Image 1 (cartoon, rainbow, N blue to C red):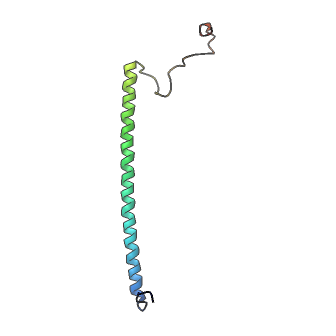
Image 2 (tube, one colour):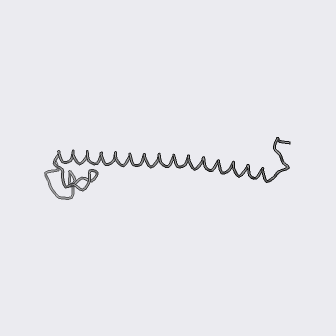
Image 3 (tube, rainbow, N blue to C red):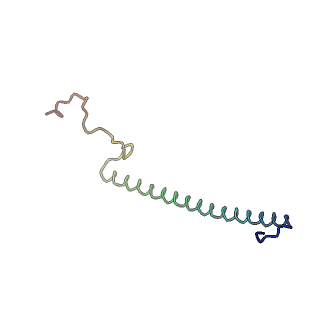
Length: 90
């Protein structure tokens, strides 16, 4: 009816099994390729972050800001409004 030999169910099952195994193998290869690509990009991003961190540390060293905990956290506030210092007021 559909062009397949329906008189031999064992052959049909074997063909379907081979087809599914081939499909799963192709999916596994594609998944592994994508996984390798993602890991590679994560490693590359890690290297770029390390380079950026080194550049920031070099700039901080040139500016004489060594010892500060991190570039995003200033070591001390610019204006202390609770100190009672009248020189900050005009």
